[in-house]
Length: 176
Image (cartoon, rainbow, N blue to C red; front, side, top):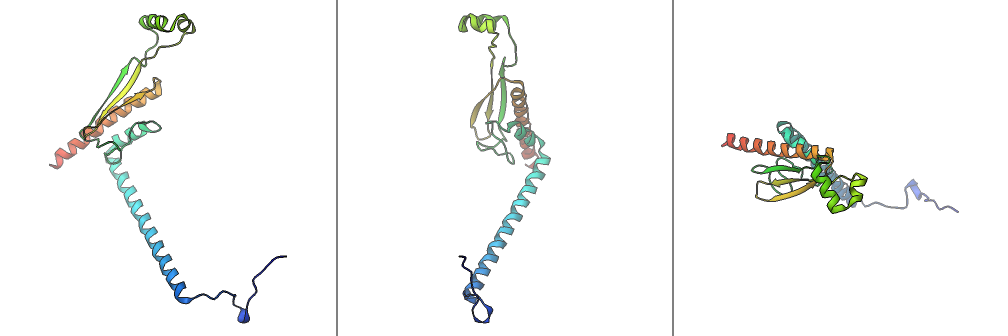
């Protein structure tokens, strides 16, 4: 058996609405809608300003693309979560991470890992790191996987970081 609402005399529902409360709720709802619209407009303006800034600073785009899906800090208007890019520097240390077998590695691999490593052809890859120093003096070291795609991204990140730092420093000098 299903229950339904039945209209009262005059065809109105059983619920009587207080006109004052309804007006208050409508005013609050309209105010919240206005605030949401203003916040959306502000976000859109910020997004456009950031897009314009990044068009003038293409190194930041390159740096953020290289940092994507990695633990390296990305930048927004020259600021990372660890500090400003301006006044900072980055260096890429690739200690043979890209090199194949050499005689010394073969000997080292056989000496440390035994004959099985040499027999199976296991490569003893070197290490690669990125050393980043930010404008506030904070320094951080990030390890890089010894794979060509990661090494390429690391090199691209370091070059873009240094280019952005130089561009921001030259803009400050020009403004002074």
